[in-house]
Length: 375
Ligand code: PLP
Image (cartoon, rainbow, N blue to C red; front, side, top):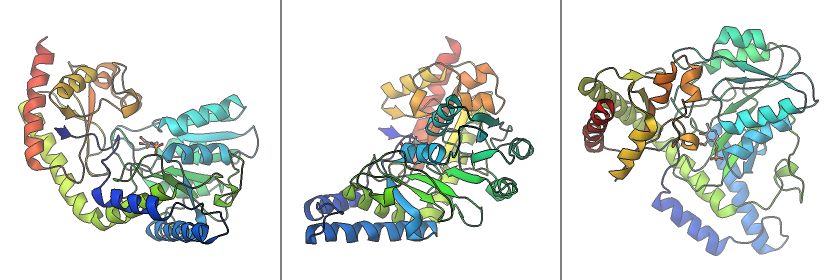
C-alpha cells in the first residue's frame, strides 16, 4: 500500500492513540463538573489550551476547541457578521467550509466578493486591494491551499486588510504544523486548525480569535468555551490533537527538508518519464509534501481509480470531489483550461513517506498515464 493522500487525512500516530486511550480511561469526567473528576478533566483541558496557544504564540484565552476545521471556519465567517449588509471578501479557491458559509451569508444579503488567483497559485494582491473597503465585514484567505499547497503572501495580505481595520481570517488547516503561521506579525485576527491533518484524531480542531475581536456564537447551550463554541468538550480528542501538534512542530524543519526533496524528486522523475506534465502552484512557496500536476489527455478520476486498484492512494483535486470527472475549481481559478483542470491530480506525501515509495509510485503512474493516453 502506498498512501499519498495526506492532505485528505493522516493516520493517527500510535503515541496519540495511547494518549487518547489514557484520557478515555482516566479523564472521562465532564470538564464543567464541580467535583474532582470534573476538575481533573478541566485541568487537562486548560493544559491543552495553554500548550496549543504556546505553539500558535497567542494567549490561551484566545484559543477555543471545536469539532474541526469546518466548524472553526463557519464560526469565523458567520460569527463575524454584524449586519446583513456590506460585503465579505474571500479567495477564489477557499475550501467549501469557508465558501459555503460565505454563500450562506450572501443569501442573507451580504455581498460576496471573490479575489482571483494568479497562475502561481497566490491571490492577486492588487485585486484584494480593490475589493476591500470600509463595508467589508471579514476577509478570509486560506493560509495554504489544500489542492495545490501554495502558501499565500500573508505579510502583504494583513497590511492590505488592516488599512480599513477589517477582520482577517485564515483557514490554516493545511498549513498548521507544516509552516510557521506568524499570526501576530501577519496581523491575523482568527485562524482555523484541524487535528486530523497532523496525525491526530478526526472531529477535533480549534479556532484562535484575537482577544480584541468579537465572534458571535453559532450554537447555544451550557456556555463551554466561553460561549463561543458551547457543548461538552471532547477531551480525549483534544489531548490527542495537542500532542500531535507538538510532535508536528518539533518535526517541522526536518520534515520540510525531506518532503520538499521528495516532491521535487517525484516531479522531476514523472516529467522525465512522461511528456507534457504541468506542475500546478508555486514550486517553492508551498507546504512541503504537496505536489499537484495536470496530465493533459487523461481524466484525473480514472488515474485515481486505477491506482486505487493497485493499492496506491492519491486524490484528484480535493478529497471532497476526487471521484468526479468535473474540472477542479482550484485549477480553473489559477487559469488552467478545462482539459488541464480535469487532468489534475494531487499527490500529498507525509511523515512516513519514503523515496522507495516515490520510485514505485512513479513507475506505476507512468504506466497508468501511458494506458490512459493511448485509450
Ligand atoms: N479547510 C481546509 C483547507 C481543509 O483542507 C479542510 C479539510 O479537508 C477543512 C478546512 C475542513 O477541516 P475538517 O475536516 O477538520 O472539518
